[in-house]
Amino acid sequence: HEKFHKLCAATITAYYNHKTAEVDRNLPEIQRISDEVIGYLDAIKKKI
Picture 1 (cartoon, rainbow, N blue to C red):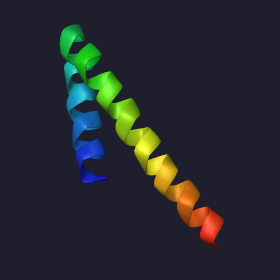
Picture 2 (cartoon, rainbow, N blue to C red):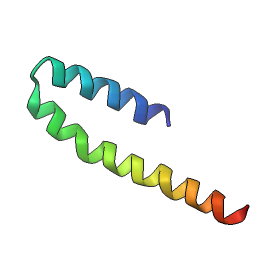
Picture 3 (cartoon, rainbow, N blue to C red):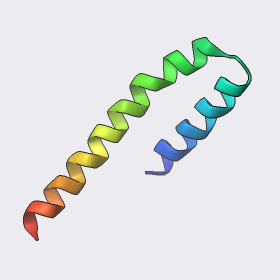
Picture 4 (cartoon, rainbow, N blue to C red):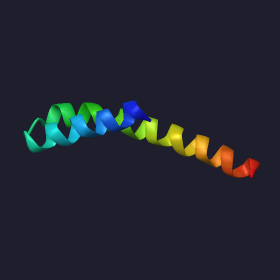
């Protein structure tokens, strides 16, 4: 969770600094972590 927020913040900073290569490198990892978190939330939801 913390890694996700740090990576998002770094990516936003890179975007505003026109560092498109860094943004492009970070986006797949952001998506992967997001999918992982959603998977955990779905698993918790099924147990309720």
